[in-house]
Amino acid sequence: MLRHASYSPPVKNAAEILAMREACTVAATVLDRLCDFVAPGVNTYDIDQEGKRLMAELGCESACYNYQIGNKSFPAYTCLSVNDEIVHGIGDLKTVLAEGDNITVDVVIRYNGWIGDNARTVIVGEGSEEMQQLVATTEEAFYKGMAQARSGKRVGDISNAIQRFVESKGYTLVREFVGHGVGTGMHEEPQVPNFGRRGTGDRLRPGMTLAIEPMVNAGKAAIRMSNNGWTAHTRDGKPAAHYEHTVLITEGDPEILTIPKK
Ligand code: MF3
Ligand code: CO
Image 1 (cartoon, rainbow, N blue to C red):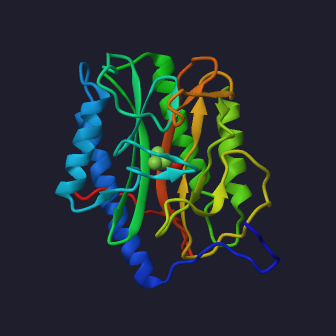
Image 2: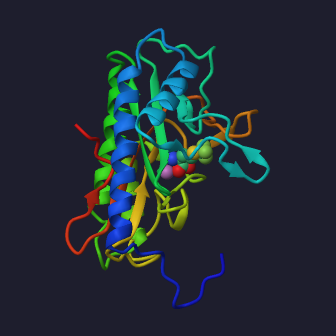
Image 3: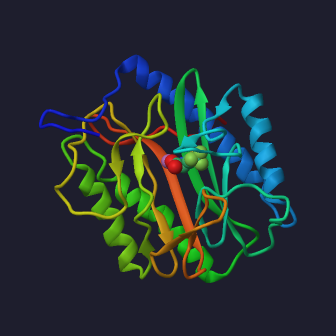
């Protein structure tokens, strides 16, 4: 995209924020219920189908299904990424979850024309100490980033907080996929990388809605792409974790919009 000096990422007005709030509540409710469906012996095709069913029940549609990048079109309703899969995993009858696996459930929905985007990695059963550490660190990294999502700060402040925290724990951050603005489109400006320098990038303003989403590898940062053209794996085969919410920048504290309905 061409940018000039006066460019600044989209800011939502009160009505648009209300619409985002509603979409994000639905997205979070689908994610919550879908995570409850995760269990040993369940295959990821069935989890995706349950996602499709929940979306219909809640009156929204998948923003992933048929999502186009170049000439590819995403074939599933949710992204389900197991163990060394980082993002954009595709549910599959042959991928049967076992105790100790991790699965990232990533739900992006459209409701009344607005997008809600959220994801988290859950462990099937209890999982190893290492797996628990990885998942907990990824979630904490999100909160470190969100703490910087304040009016007057810059995108690089979020990025840097995530990077410093994750690397201090001995993990690495994926470079090829980043957080992003969310609105009527799934990926709006600005990009929100999970690495970067403080005080750089776009200035944050009240009314911006950002998907902040650390993708953390237990081993090295390098990825490899699956033959399916969508799914990113860790190159070294070690597990990855992901944690994402849609966050509203306000005059004061940032607000997570992707909070489920009771
Ligand atoms: N949360 C993911 C993202 O922001 C979801 C992508 S959906 C897909 O990239 F259609 F691209 F798979
Ligand atoms: Co996202």
